[in-house]
Length: 276
Image (cartoon, rainbow, N blue to C red; front, top):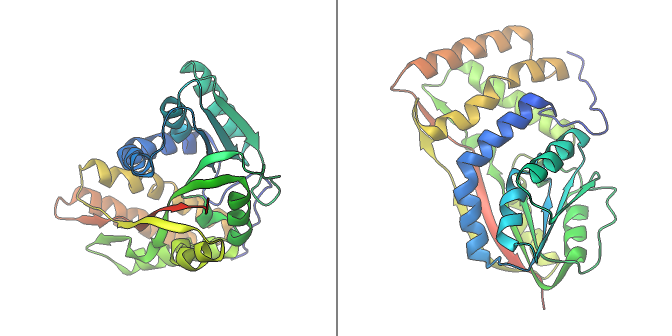
């Protein structure tokens, strides 16, 4: 198979209308987890908060409400399609305190000491130069500022049981595509060492993993992606069409079987503070 390249503002998963809808569904499921993390971190009205990898803005909308009219949200994403959706969503919700910036993190001119807090969820796992991104985050945080993240720490914990060999081949293809484009599906394993390089103090670190069965809301979270992913992986050259077809049969069988179970990929939630 010939492995494809990505367009400048594209993603491994893809940036399109279907992905905007999927991300909305994803945020609805993970929203309470994000709100709880922000409460633990002490985010409050009047703060300036940066949303790194904001996508179409579902988390940014909640952050904008949290910091209030006197606060500010800086939403950064490399996809113009996602940012167009973010601007429209902000207008629809009458949120005037969100600033959109279209940029790849590698090219972003990080403002100095501009933010009280910075939020990242499933963004740094796709960034080729994580150290560079964290350096930019360190630059943009005010002294005593907070970095709040939910990022994958053990992607291979993702399971659908009863499993079949085609599921393992699918996970291999996902991991290979991730690594090929410079990402790291287990990026949060590196956080303790990286955070220590910047002298950040870890205030909170907690793994998050969930179990679900067909019909559960959590079950629907990866399913909306798994139904699209085989075609994307075939297009990129990481999965052959035969395995894609077999994977769809496997997925259909698991969704029809009430005895099936799903374990979500393990996420590490971290809250760290820049020295003040």
